[in-house]
Every structure is written in C-alpha cells, then in structure tokens.
Image (cartoon, rainbow over the protein chains, first blue to last red):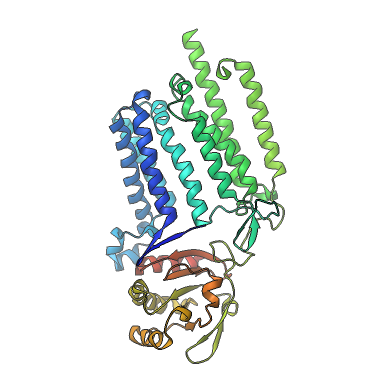
Amino acid sequence: MFPILQVGPLAIQVPGLILLIGIWLGLSLAEKTAPQRGIPSNTLYNLVFFGLIAGIIGARLSYVIRYPNIFIDNPASIISLNPGLLDLWGGAVTAFIVILIYAQRKKLAVWQTLDALTPFLGVMALAIGLAHAASGAAFGFETDLPWAIELWGAQRHPSQIYETLAAVIILIIMWPKRSIWKTTEPGIYFLTFFAFSAAAHLFLEAFRGDSVLLLGGFRSAQVIAWAALAFSIWGIYRLQNKDRTASG
Amino acid sequence: MLFDNPKRWLVIAVLVLVLGAAWILVSKAPPGGTTGGGIPAPHEGFLAPDFSLATASGSTITLSELRGRPLIINLWASWCTPCRAEMPAMESVYNQYKDQGFTILGVNVTSQDNPTKAAAFVEEMGLTFPILYDAQGEASRLYKSSALPTSFFVDKNGVIQRVVVGGPMSEALLRIRVEELLEIE
C-alpha cells in the first residue's frame, strides 16, 4: 500500500497517478491497433478524449445539481480542480451519452468501435488493480493463508494482487497484435475480453472483504458478473452464428 | 477452433455458467465476514479508531464519546501550508453546521510540531472548534498519517465515510461532505 507520494510540499495521490498513466498507455495501445478494426486512430482518440472530458464535466455537474446552494455561495468551486467533487455515476452516464452521440455522428459501427476500445479497457483494468493496491481499497477477506497481507488491522487475502494478476493474464491473452484476434468477426474480440473479465470478477469477488451483500449473504458483484458472463457468452454465440448463416 | 463448433460451444457455455452459479453459492459471505464498519482502521468503511487527547485547557476528549454526532477529524501542524490554507473553510463550516450536532476535532500533530507555535496558530486563525494536542503521536500512528493535512469524515455511527489526504479543501467540498454525513442515518 502506497497511497501518497510526498514530493516536497506536494502530496501526490498515487492511485490517481496510476490511473492517468493507465489512460495514456491504454489509449496509445488502442490507437495503434484501431486501424486493423477499421477505425481511424484519431477518431478513436477523439472518442476517448471527448468521453473523458464529458465524464469530468458530468461528474462535477452531478454535484452542482444536488447541492445548488453551496455552489451559489462558492461559484468558483464549479470549476475548481478538486477531484473530490467528481461523482462517478454522473460522470459515467454523461461520458456514455457523449460517446454514443460522437459515434453516431461519425457513423462508427458499434462492434468495430468496441473491438478498437478493448486494448484501452484491458490496460485500464490493470491500472485499476494497481490503483487499488496503492490505496488499499477493494481489500480482501481475512485469512491465515501464508500469502496473506497485513491490511486494515487484519491478515487478509491480497485481493488487489489477485485482481492485478488477473488483468495481466487477460491482457496477455487479449493482446491485440495476436494473429487470432485479427481474423475474428467484429464484436467477438470485445465480447471475449468482456467474458474473461466477468469470469475473473465472479471468481475473485469471493476473496473480497468489502463485498456488498444481498439477502442470504450473496455477493452482489458476483451476481452481476455472472449475468455479464452469460450475456457475453450468448453474444459470442450469436455473432458466430450470424456469420455462419451469412457465409453458409 | 473453439468458436467454430456450436455444440462444443454450448456445452462449454453451460458448464461455465453452472460452475459460476455454484461458485456464487459456495463463496457466500459468512455473517460478519465483510467489514460492515465493525473493525477499527483508518480507512473508508471502517470504524474510526478511538483515541483520548488533551485540549489546551487540560480537559480530555475521547472520540467514542462523541458517537451520535457526525464529525471531521482533521490532522494538522502549524508549519503545514495547506493546513493553514484550509482552516478558514473549516471554521466557517463548523459554524454553519454545529447547531445540527456536527463538530470538528482539530488534531495537532504535536509530536511533529511546536506547542507554542501550534497555540499561536489557533489564536491567529480564530478557531473555535475543539483543538486536541497529540503530544505522543498516538492519534497520528492510529490514523497512519502520511501527509498533512489529512481529514477523516466520520458519520454518527463512528464509521469513516471519506478520507481526504492533502489539501487545502475548498469550503464547497467541505460543506458537501458534511451534508453527506448529515444525511446518513
């Protein structure tokens, strides 16, 4: 765990720094391989860039809408650089809408675009694992296994390490320059990544000590991951079958 | 290739999903298995570690005795520039919300500060919320303070909702965090 890097008077938030590096590396990789999916590099770059900008604006606006009086008293805070005033869901929804509008205007095909974005998502999954390791968030269940780590007052599963390793393995399997991924039908590359990620979440959530529980002690993230896995397996089957009908 | 054989694909799909569902069942969390705010640790979702510290007047304040009131634990030192920068906002927010039961514990990391300078800082800033002196560094160790200022937003159940390392925090951010604390039942 290494949440803060103290450089003179500056306290740099390591998790945030890792995510920024992840965005940069992920975007570079996706840009390089986008043309093989029929998406021009600069279109993909713009798509992610507009999505990020919209995400940041939406994340701030979500707070402004919820607490208008506070922002009327302190209008400068609407544009302050404070990351604490960014709402994840408000940002995600706005980013999604803007990406959708941009993709529509550029007439981007959905599956090809998702395929082109997959290397970016793969690198981000790895960055999120490392960010969790730095902050100590997404921590593990208590255990006395020999590889347990001391965190938050107990010996725990190193869930952040599991998460990072899973992301590394998935990234290796899904490496965009592998020849197998160059010939698949549009959408299969993305859905395979999605299926592997869902399966990894389904498996690894069992070792988490901070799971949100449903009635009966079921972990809600596992139920969502199971549904995502089922959806992606069904999607791969459909895309593959469509091809069969078309070519047969 | 795997993708080319629909029958084999179906068998694998069903197998994976059945195994997945079985895994969900097997890995159900035992009662008390997840944190639920029961263990003290200086992290979001955990119980705020308890401490007793002296004020300038010599009286002692114990964190657990303030259970029932949302509060901020703000670790600061007089030499720390961002601490100085955010104190006026802290004072203002304290005055706006103290009638609703909210309070701030300004914990001076005295083990890394000079008590005279700390007292002068409080005087100069006109701080009216409780200021505690952590002479032995007990609270800073408990809260694993790695940078100053660090603020812990604790709800009325004693559970840490947010941790903000570094500063200064703007008044708007502080007010929103306090409003969020007050909304928690």
